[in-house]
Length: 466
Figure 1 (cartoon, one colour):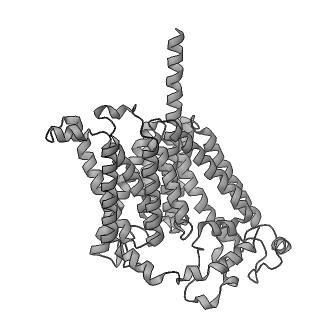
Figure 2 (figure 1 turned 180 degrees about the horizontal axis):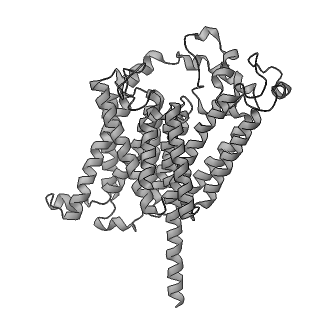
Figure 3 (figure 1 turned 60 degrees about the vertical axis):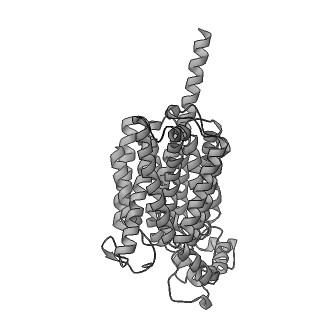
């Protein structure tokens, strides 16, 4: 089942982010079958059952509200906000009820991947291997993106590219979506790099003239591979030329580094027998080297990002129409229908900002969610985010072996949250499924590590009583 989950996730990512309806439907069917099979075979997850049930309830309530929007007369919106503007043929709160029904897939399919990951990954070891698969799979996508950028920039997956021929898009259509995906991959690889580097006693390694035993040789091999893959992913991220994607990735990397150092790693980890934790001097030297390497990457490969930012500045279209989007959202407290932005925005669009393109996204995750679902978006989103943060914070405070995975989960949430202010990457099903799978695995590790720690305490208490 774990292999089938990986296959489904690969399909979601490589099929242009599962944006084509056929790909989205197939991925949804695969995730549904896997979830039902896992629950029937293993039962609901014993650890994390609370958040598992919470996600089901939130998704169910959201779908129910979407159906209600499809039936409530448009007069309800006028009663709340008399200045609300709708298309002439609008009869219900949902401007395009059929599109709202289809858009439910954009919500349910990522949720299915989260639930499936928690159901299939029964142990902490399985979840750790799955996170490693996400990192290496993402790095493979980055390699493809760089090859595509230099060798055949006019095509993507043997299909002609209609836009972004000057940027790395990997298997996605939009460079901002690729930047979010590569940023998450960079976080996963950076955590792995940190974990592997702690398993090498560098002072003895240098003192012995680079002589190592078989275990250390294996660790160094994986460490070297991770360094190469991390650099490749960072280069691909810079070549996306996505200002929001690069900035949010750097912010989340900074948070990852600060939290990993903030309380120190657990020295009771099973894999820590090969080495001891580095002292402060070596640690700060390593951090300085990493920062210098990142700065070099920014200077060498990030010039296109900086050039684009200096040329366009604040004059691009999304900032021009932002006041109109705010006006749209403020006039629809009950929502205009989930996934109906392109229809609802038309009466509010300012012609002075240009009429060359159709705005089918708000380029802001929060405005689009608030506009589509209305005020219901706030408690629904806040409930899930608060629950996840509570799980991760508890995982960090336990000093358990899964602490770094909890930090990875928080850093990933920060990345998508920050980038969501200026782009719509999380509205791409493939990106949402990738993030949901990572969050599901890291949530499971955080909860299981705490459970294992409690079991150890109980065993010690019983032994002392005997």
